[in-house]
Length: 431
Ligand SMILES: *Cc1c(COP(=O)(O)O)cnc(C)c1O
Image 1: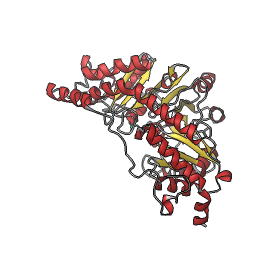
Image 2: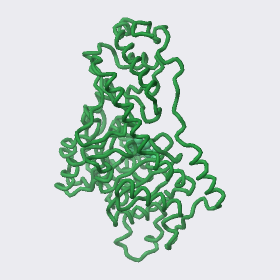
Image 3: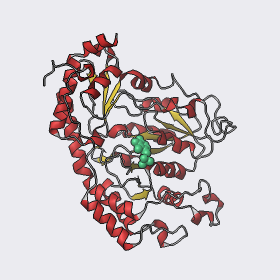
Image 4: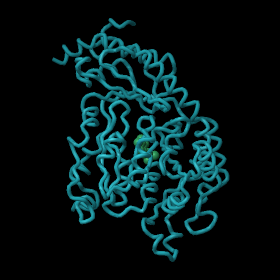
């Protein structure tokens, strides 16, 4: 196999003939832990009423203790998904309808819908094209008298610029929330990125670095927010039955409780996080070394003091230098057997829900309501950097889901070189 053989997309042999999909992330240890819970007969040990069982069963609490220690936070709270975690975090702030939360469009929809669930309004700040993370200067330019919080995402596994975001939050009296679904184990100057937010956390969904099928973990140092999130997680009946009206706001409870089986599995998975991340970092270093110098391809940068958990290895294309549309390159890479290639990510500000401003009912609530600033705009043109990346220049490789070894990465590098060497033929074909 060499770079001159015919491209697979044009009928040649692929570099990777038998692409290997994701390796199973759970094994015998998890099976045993799950079996033990089943045999105990206690699959969940929560009670919604006040009392010791309000905070859940033995495995849930053990997971929380382990997570608090691992991530270095005063509190960790287990929830049944990270989407639930985000809803708890936003809810704990006690927002008024129409309050604004500035967040990023370059993330999964749950980041923004968690805000809308509380009748608050997501305001999308553009991103930094070098890191794909929210751009602090753009955040500051969007602050209004209605702004209450910033919700930043450590997207693809790289911590956001938490120092800059914290400075802005302090200057304007805003809460700072984090979404680290893709970034467990990613650090800034030795501290876990999500612990730099007032509330942050991680997903335990099947597709993430570590998982228990479904689940999530909230981390915070704030006692008051931790107790409010624990209420929201478990029906908030304690508060609803309480007597002080001042404590009622935002206490619309859910059932976001994680079961004992998932908690037992998650505990074992958490123990496997560090070596798993090291493996992704090794793979990413090998990729960056191997792909260096390919015309028009920009590999990920990691700011000083940050570590990257590489859920996604996010690249950028310079179309003036590649001379080929992104889709043609992506198709050619896929044809060579490269798994996990994505040629677009997310532009939440262009989702129909925001463009048409319809969430609750048909009349546009909460966007079009007396509670909400009427001049807020979504849609194309409001986050041009994220738009250009999504429409033309972003190219990603789902590293975290594939767990590729050294020889597999070498084949991926070979496929990139083959495609790049012959990309003019793709152009000719496309014409
Ligand atoms: C996966 C993901 C979520 C949602 O997590 P779940 O555990 O699947 O609910 C939220 N935000 C981001 C950035 C994600 O990648």
